Image (cartoon, rainbow, N blue to C red):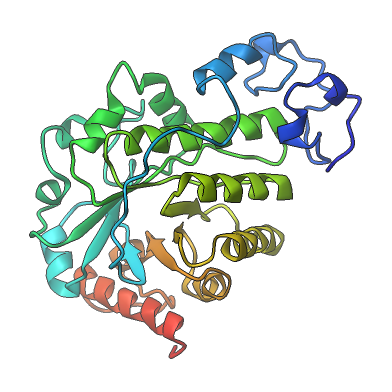
Amino acid sequence: MAAAAVGCHCDLCRFFSLCGGCHGECSHAFCARPCSLCGVRCARRRDVSDWVWDAGGTLELAVPVRWPGVPEDWPAVVPEVDGSRMAEYDAAAGWPAYAVGPAHAHVLTPGGTLAPAWRGRKAREKLGLPEGKKVILHLFGPDELLEGLWRNQHAARVWEGIASLGFDLVLGPNFSVYGEHPRFEHLLNMRRSLVAAARLAALGVPVAPHVYWWTRQDLARWAGAIEAMGVPAVAVNAQTYRTKEDWDFLLAGLRYLGERLGDRVLFFVNGVSPARAVEVREVLPRVVFVSRAVQLRAQRGRTLDGAKGGAPAPELFRRNLEQFLDFLQGTS
């Protein structure tokens, strides 16, 4: 555990037991700006109690809710699609499951509310998919969209709207945990990620809460909470871990979670290349990969290996899925 930091007044902070103290990368430890001019939340703000209340009155990773079971029969990779020409893509690939996100498939408005085009329709119907196909909704997005979702969740009945769409699984929102931010912001956003997923679970929606972390203590808290609550699946958005240092950080955390949680928990990892997916498989007993690149590369006339495809996008989509599987099976 980190030592109490003078600049953060850790010795006076009521969240120190959850936090473990300020960290070296925090750029706000000795901040002297007026809080009214700062968009970052730290434990020194006068309105800190309001933010805790808004997240359910605590920053603990515990919510009294029954977590619905999630389907088990997923393909190794689930392609994220934008919703266009789905009959053609499905005819070419014949894939058992697809994913959509809040932005590319326009499930949510920029303000975080359910888009009018999705209201009153089941997900499969909206995408033009036949019965038997599974559809995942992931709620990963930019901070502005997720803050809008959180702000409007009750007034716009966002969770009820999502529940009405009949997704086979929802991957919960990924409220950000940035290294340069104070630990209070980390704790708050981890809590909000859990609460958002729990609100869907309370409506009977199969949901995987999203997990971010910054310290070993965060990982231990997440693992303990997932075990205690009997959460059947968790999600990790890996899109932003681009450098080797960032990737090593992520992989070490996944290894810890895999060792703690074993094969009871199913992981859904989004945004990794086929080569990195192989590394993830080595540290997680059970994992499904969600990939936007499969369709995006096809739409740009290329396969996952970077080659020009020379075929229509739906055909390249099929080839990209096969390439991803070949990597995972060690035949590429």
